[in-house]
Image (cartoon, rainbow, N blue to C red; front, side, top):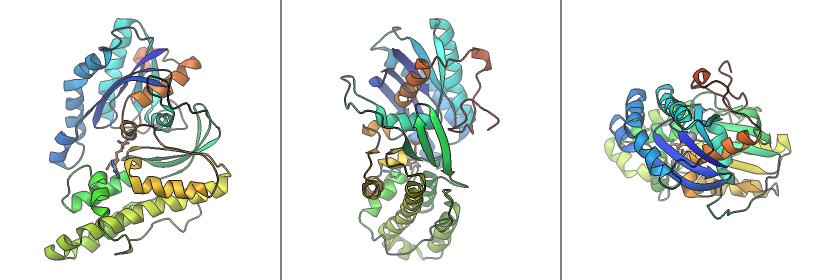
Length: 346
Ligand code: KG4
Ligand code: ZN
């Protein structure tokens, strides 16, 4: 079953062709250079950039299969409304032109299914071992859920303010390190001392599974702005390491609580921040204590936003005959929730 999938939820214009879990082609065109200038994603600039290149990205993706695909899939949310709209409109047009059924996919379930991707030869061959504890750490989300079975999720914890990736991006911006910041912070942190300064770990004492990063960001702001330029310059590596440590330890604390509470040993992790080697190590070390399996996106290109992950999730929707009945009624849902499929009231 060949699926042509589109994701334009934030600042990547991505189009893929997948066959079940196998990735045939996964094209990702990033707007990072455009957004760097503004220090973040500006919704209307993002829309324009998606509009400017989406036809080209579709053409590139279709070079391998021409029009021999069976279904079209598209991200309906969560994400930036003007950005999502570009992908959805294009998917509707293609569905009409090629007379194919459309599948709507939640971006967050895409991040989860990225752990089950395979190359075109069908490797790696992982079996699903439900139920899983799932953790998504991205620029827009920090979320814990139970992945009970295919397409069946229950959110058990989420951020009450900023996402972890956003917290890293904002700190990097404050230090004048550009956008997005997670990768730069990781690079600097490697040479710094994570114990140099103890930044607070908000919500770490609460007994629920929710996260909060805005207090940490504020504390970083006051700490850094009080310094002289020389002091700041001399300690850049240490700031990066200490701040990154606070963000990651907040995540690990809640993940541990979730393991204890849910008695679920297998773990699935997805989202752009997972590109961070230290975070993966911390997660792997923790999950070893519970003797379960821990799954990360199988290829590096699947950490960040991409359409292949949308195509894989769409495959499982197609197996259950979950297609969009009426093309005109499909609308973007910028605050879509993982556990409320296509529900805009959620
Ligand atoms: O999943 P993603 O590509 O987009 C969203 O759906 O939000 O995640 C983007 C986030 C950004 O905040 C970026 O700074 C972060 O992932 N990120 C990283 C690294 N690479 C990207 N954070 C920490 N370490 C990295 N190496
Ligand atoms: Zn994402």
